[in-house]
Length: 343
Image 1 (cartoon, rainbow, N blue to C red):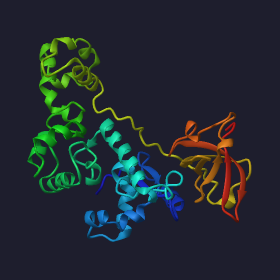
Image 2 (cartoon, rainbow, N blue to C red):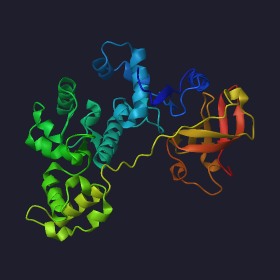
Image 3 (cartoon, rainbow, N blue to C red):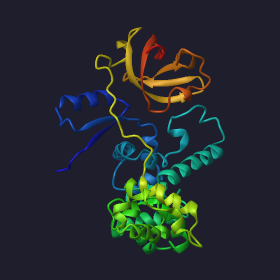
Image 4 (cartoon, rainbow, N blue to C red):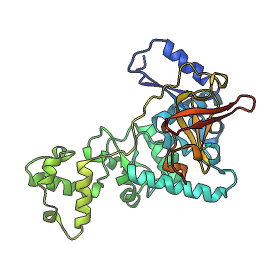
């Protein structure tokens, strides 16, 4: 029997009804039910990547897997989908597709460098963005992982075919291993600096494990004592910062948003209603908000605040939880106008 921690439901057809069904089933209070954007899931399910990952399943199962994975690790899953199929932003179909892909690649690379990726769970399309790796080495890592099992330490990477010492030096600091044989493998500390950390621990008469996350002990370390020919003060300070907050992840914890239970379709909306919603898209002229009626409504930039707003991104961000007031409903044309002023 599986221990289910969360349920991911696509926000497409019958998504709201499925969510309500789960709530009526009286499941454990600890089990959260999330509604996840399924934009591009059908594109992924018929893609070469999906066929390679799940050759034994049809497109419906692959799409369901994609929706579930988006809840677990959105970046790792969304990099498999063509940018214009994700349905986020404005004019994504009109701009130069090569330039769009290049700019998005830059964003993913920055995320990978800042947060790092889990070596035992990341997909090949995500691993290829890690410095020192590429499509072929990323595939080799996944193949090795599938054959030999989870990586126990970063040093195991050297057993991956075609992954040499140079590539290891470049990629190791960005790859994380949780619960492995070496605690520092779950941090941004590069293996080349492990001996440095051990020296720091020995100078305080303790072991490496006791240094990790221990601000009081770390304050007692004098960085200047450990400066060497190949280890400068900037490197030492970076190591100390990482030891203080190892594997720091700037991403927020998932939170469940509950839509108004009395509102299920666009016909239930009435002018003046104040509803909880989630931002699904941000454009130059405003933001689209989902309030659970299968049709997103627009908060025009002029209705975002009681002041002049030049850029909607000053006020909202993608997937942000907001409260909106219904201004106008055109059921025939399926258009909804919201306001965030005074809400």
